[in-house]
Length: 104
Length: 104
DNA sequence: CCGTAATATAAGTCGATGCTTATGTGTTCG
DNA sequence: CGAACACATAAGCATCGACTTATATTACGG
Image 1 (cartoon, rainbow over the protein chains, first blue to last red):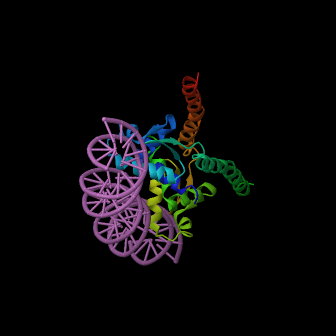
Image 2 (spheres, rainbow over the protein chains, first blue to last red):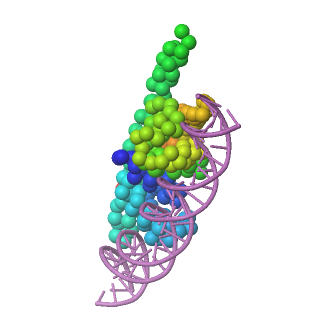
Image 3 (cartoon, rainbow over the protein chains, first blue to last red):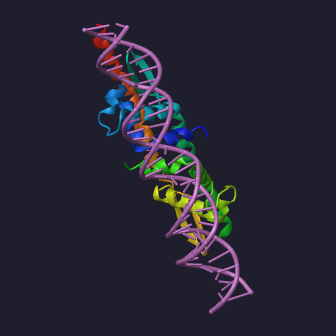
């Protein structure tokens, strides 16, 4: 599934918090580390997972690497949610048809 | 976080497939089991996780328990996605302000 | 009633995963 | 150059989580 790595990336609370911070402001790894009670490698590993899911992208500036959330990243997730919310009216119609057959 | 169990519930491919089937049609556990290569307890455990995440609800009918997706269940997820997509224009504005200060 | 069917729960196993420390890679600066 | 810094990668470890089999619970049917 296309959206599988996205769901998996966002399932971890720490990683989701990293993404949320990067949605508000571009940041390098050191800035990102402050505020989370985990090591720098842990942050880097989370960033790799988010990058593989297409949720963040990076920009090198000398020794620093600045991360930011990818605006397109949430599109597959938004589409998935939209598709499944659209199914509801169809389900209601199906129920109505079934009920109509039951009570003539 | 409120949406944590939702993300975690949808992170597993099998469980997400269960939810997707239940979005299209109400089904009991035995019907649900056919089509997945896992045991009945595995299905029940997935259903428990989905129920705890508020994604499905149940209706007992004799020995059978029919599950269906809860229409309100995806609302927190949709809201979360919406909130984070809304952040993008703000980020662009912030960038513009920064750029304006840099090049007078 | 009693056997069976539908589902849930318990207990155990094993791979996935999130963390750590240690080390590697690339960049700046004295 | 080389020391220090920013970050990535490697390796190990401990917990989590998805699955299994076994058993309990509830409901139906003969």
